[in-house]
Length: 634
Image 1 (cartoon, rainbow, N blue to C red):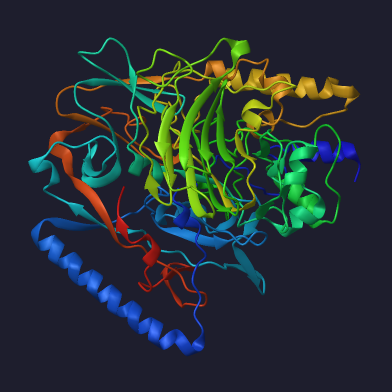
Image 2: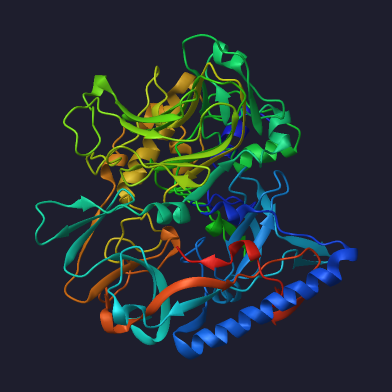
């Protein structure tokens, strides 16, 4: 195949004959735990234990219902992945990751079986049907939505709190129950801007960002990458690893014996930090088609692997139905919005008695770092602004830009630790071995509400947003995970009909036309493809000079006494208060209670028999529950 045809194919249009998926970007790492299997010898005992557990859960549900709680079933995916409506759980053919996609009854009846999903780890388009004779039948059964318990009297004795998961009667139809997350409270004006929530109360001079408590941050983080799920075929084809050392000296320190799943830390006696950095190297479906056909990874300026900005991609929404409606459009389908609020987690094995270990997160012009002194266990938080941009900032409560935050941790000497480092809602948080680290002062900071990604030929900026640095440390790192925060899309029914995206249509058209022109002029390329936002985010030479990020819309909603504003965690696919045709709020009298427990999250066992809930669509029976997801709702 000629390079020109490959270039044109890579930027495919909605009218192409062959269906493919490019879908906006699905939280908890438990969403990606492999589904259990059972051997014949253990199945009887396992089934008995599962049945006993379900019976206990049912009895508890009836007891709660009689006194202070009521059981509900989640029907749709507007709160995914926190709460799942009816869905499919699919194992990626290439990297082995289990991922979930919404399959509500109304959706399947209206559009047919789900025939393809996109893996959030490696972006491979997985088929979910198999051929039997002349028919295509689903290869994965549908799973029923989560069964939850709702405290019906919680708000009789206390006011609702921001970030609660609430159940209420839909204002436009009091016979219909909705479940969303409470974001806006009475007597305040709520502003959604660049994925975050700001509020203005009567006694305030200006809008302030609303920060999620640490437990909510953990519960709402969305998975981006996990080194447990590295597709071997990508490695063999020469696709660049997402975690890589950035220089020759770094490469001599960081060695991966397993293709990027883990890294050995060699001797590094120099005084310099040696960096391992993350770049969001996401293959497109066209790349996967080339690799499946045995073609080499392309090297031309259009198709070669390029790092992309991290976006609000939800694999829960990334699917194609039987009617072959393609989830592909000029607006892009691998996430329409850049997300700068990130988190990184790793398992660190230290073999040396001293040295320095550093974790770094980049957002726009700022670098947020946590330095661990291996000898003492001391941790130090640092904000490093871009001096060239004149954009230095400090932690709240400090006049000096150089003021750091100090803490004592158990990352001291040889040992193994799980460390999580997050930058969410203008707040830095650190967990060591599952425990939140308490620092010497506030770890919050203030920046303008509107930020834009940064890149230059000498500084990768937001195209290399995460780093792990070491100096004088030996050991290893495994299970590196990247997460992003929920991105609340600023839309309302007056400005958006159809896709939920913040940019005006004319802004998208202008910037994608600019990209197409730039590609045609680049080295004399003969390019005739149609660009999408997925492509745009891979070309910083274009978006750095463009104004698309500056043209993101914000929305405001004013609330009076006893009015509450709910939104779904699955923001690109949630018809919540942002999009209601009537009042954009819920009156107090419509609140039914607080959702507090998933008591029966349906699980899956390979080969477990299904039943037919609708024509030709198998649905798993009530057994077994997914014990990993049982617990309190955050």
